[in-house]
Structures are given as structure tokens and as C-alpha cells.
Image (cartoon, rainbow, N blue to C red; front, side, top):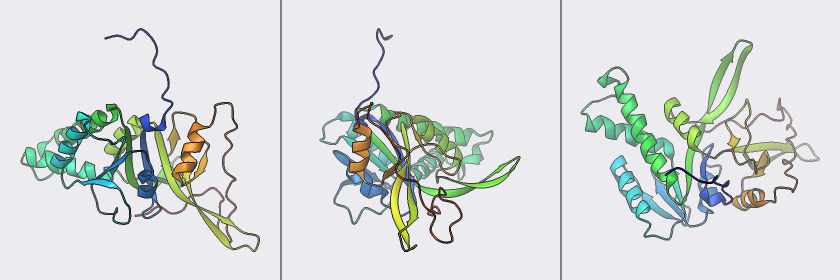
Length: 259
């Protein structure tokens, strides 16, 4: 039961648990669809323009059934994509409320309803993460006002409720924020570039436990693979910093979040 040797770091991106979030229509699902052996657990419409394998998920029971089939291993898929994890959490909430015959989580009192929902949500995501497949969780983005002793500022975070977000952020290896970077050409006209941000910032939620990624990558799955697989001794410089377009106040401020 107890280990006799250390487990090595995972070298294959397909073994990781990843959160991908950003504004609507920026290309999150397209990025995910390039994963090897991708299977979408689609909790909301939005894949109609993509040629992908998908399982429509309309409630928590259907998600549990799909997870059971995935766990059996009798399939060719290598990456499971939960799109979106936000809707999955709402389905989990509905499931618990129906099971205990309540209309709202607070009806059980003393926070018991919320605890049941979060425990069930955590249980299922953890089970998926421990399977021998990659796991990608997709979410949208929102702006949240952060107040400190010295003032207020806006931070972009996933649209998950606070407790669900803490569960997800605590279990993933990568937090990838999909953003629209604005630069300007020689004539001063704005140039837009879709990027993935991988490192923590006061302005947005992001993170890379592997330490293998540069701060900014083009929002392109092949670019992500090349960056992840780059030899450890190779330079990992970030992409050039944004140059503010006319009228922009800061060169590092991300684009407004999708609602």
C-alpha cells in the first residue's frame, strides 16, 4: 500500500487535469477538440460547428452514467472534456435537491445542503481525474471586483460559484485563461491575437504546476503542445508583451470577460 519509491512528474500533457476558461466564442472548445482521442461530455449546446465525439449530458444522472462507461475503459478515448463544468455543477445541485426533496440548498439548514452538493461534485471530479485519461474542464469567464486596503481592482475568474471554483482550482494541474490580446501595427491600427495565459496574475486566474509553459502562448493547441514538450534546458521566453492600442490604458490588462 505504501510506496517504496517516488512517483516521477507526469511528462505527457494527456495525463494532466486542466481548467480552460475564457470569454464566449473565443475558441475554448475548438482548442479542446484538438486533444488526442477527445470525448466531450457536453452539458450545454455549442459544439455544432465542430466535428467531435460528444455525449449530450442533460442531468447529473447522465453524467454519472457516462463516467461509469469511461471508467470501464472499453473505448478509444484518451481525453475527457467536461464542457462546461459550470453546468455540471448546476446539475449536481439539482440532483441533490431532488434526492432530498428540497427546493433550495439552504432548506436543509446549517449548510448541510451545500456540503452535500460540494461533496458529490468533488467525488465525481476526483474519480474522473484519477482515471488514466486526460481531463479538461471548460468554464466561461467573469469580472470580479476585488477590494483591498489600498483600493479596488478587477480580476477575471471562472464563472463557477465560489465553493465549486475552489474545488476545481485545487485539483487541476493547469489553469489556462483564454484571452484576446490587443497590439497595434505600424499604422497604429489595433491587431487582435487570441492567447492562452498560464501564470498567476492580479488581473486574472491562471497557473502552471508543471513549470513547463511560458507565460503566454497563442490560443492554438499545437502551440501548446510544442511549448509543453520543449526540452527543460530550452529557453521558455514568453510571447512579446502587448502594446496598447490607441485609447487603451494598460498593456497587460486582459480583454473584458465574456458573460
